[in-house]
Length: 530
Image (cartoon, rainbow, N blue to C red; front, side):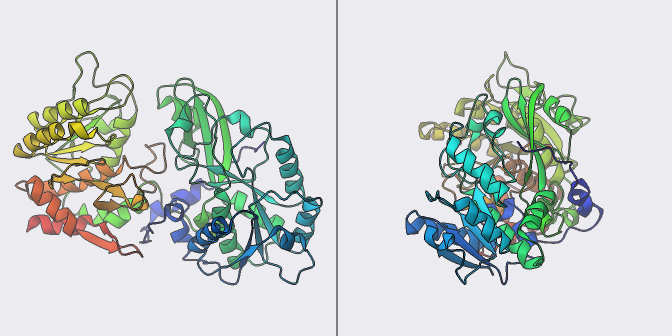
């Protein structure tokens, strides 16, 4: 069982709030941005380190693993090894890191781990290679023995830190948790859920980070490397809430009970663990909550010109907390599209979206509009009624961070958008699929190549705000971009919806290495004035 860690890196995580945030360009690689590799690369890129990938599966899978390592440790060398090569401890090739990505049905493997560790080779092993099955006693025995022999055991969490049923992990020894792109989706936040996907995909991320660290700290022994990665990790806690299932809780920003109660539920179980962060592992403090996003938008400079004063932004969502400071003294015409359901329903998604908006446009007026039923999931009818309500009550910008609609409802939604546009309101909708050119479709740069993303405008999706309990998501991009639009409306109230879209698509600033421009709020304001 993983022992709770003291959130030792709280000071590090907050350090950059005391000074200017360096401009670190993101990539279009989700894993890289999520684990802060771009900042880590300012210290190390893995030069002089060799990583051997041991896999008995098809060569295509091995090639994909090596490609992922190369993307995250671009100056490290990668080798493909067979199990026989791994077991040949007298071989003259002794890589600094070995990633064991296969079950080896051979006696003496634990002894091999011990020997290679003594030869100063760090061995990394994903805790599960296939679906998580608590009854896998043979695998559990091997993992325990390999760990005792010196291997670093890697667990896998998803984009929102889902790990499934806590009982699964209480008997499995995991030294470090790393991002696993296969473990994702809201189903892992439901009560009673378990992870039923492979966690092996976390292995390459951990191996790449280990390569960066060994290149920068060559004196570290395998044991010292394991300790270093654990103690320079992102301390995370998962909480089980009475009604809402599993919930990631960032111990660096709030206590467990405080964070749980913010969601209106009581915490009945918790699980704490160190999660890999490449920047922290290299002694660099990642930007604080929202700082990376604001830095790339150039919000500090933009705020010298405009802060959204006099502009009303409607947030179409659910669970708005009337007592939250985000709504104090700035609420305009709150409403619900359901007569039987009040707009104010407690802290939740809508409240968090308001906080994201205020990071970018701190002086806007907020119009909370409830568009969902008791299940907190919106539909086209609710969207349409919410858009009409917001436009009729004077909203200048409408932010919508909910799911796509059925294609047969597109015409009705477009009609509502047209009515809002005629009243001077512009819609920002993360899942718009229609043909109108006056709707802003934002997305995180990390999701540019994902099928779910139809975005035409990009911001960094990592580290929005501590008010939102997930590290990454499509949702916050809508209020963030809505905030930029609010500042544009402040300097030029006459801007039409189409003009706003045109300006935003010409307001690209710095580009990723792949050439995609990221939204620049300062440039948007300059163009808006014209």
